[in-house]
Length: 258
Image (cartoon, rainbow, N blue to C red):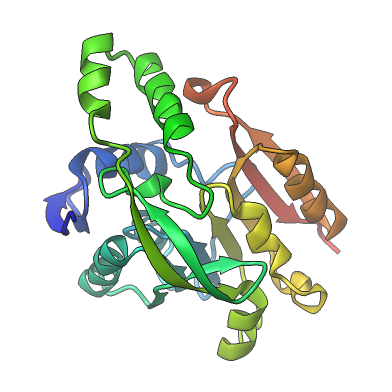
């Protein structure tokens, strides 16, 4: 199984990672294109960020450099990305608690499908064929020719089954005495609605903002947006041009004033 390595990002920061190519794409989306800082999403020193589906910690690192003084709770169930996440938190002096678990609408254990060569696609609802098709679409639209695309896809969606702990968001909030979540970031490969369903009614007022990648399967996008709107959020939905007509959307939610 792949192990962690170290590389320098274009901004000069050194990070532990699992894949050079995957980390480059994360850097482009998170740092260069600032994908999370849209539709009124803001950060303030002293705030608390929950990074659910943290992978190697690129989102946590971005939020930390964007707004020093934040406190983080980062969750990643796969052991190797979790090792990189922990190393990056330590290396950059981030005020963060990293936890190797998944968050869902129930507690217990789960079987995670882990992609060693495409770690960001790992999840409880993995489908190697559809995810390979999605990756192919993305790469073709990014300008790669067919031969290069097939080379890059070779072995990329081989899988390993991993057992991991599963918690609910409200369990974590209660255990840690969290009074407020200034930003809830969710990127959990088809489990995003289940994460929100793990939030008890008494905890919803603690959440100020949400950013999430949502896979619109079986009405999940409508359900996700409706759950946020019903709990007092203004919600915006976007789709990356490179992912047009696919299942993947970005959701931004800010709690209404008053």
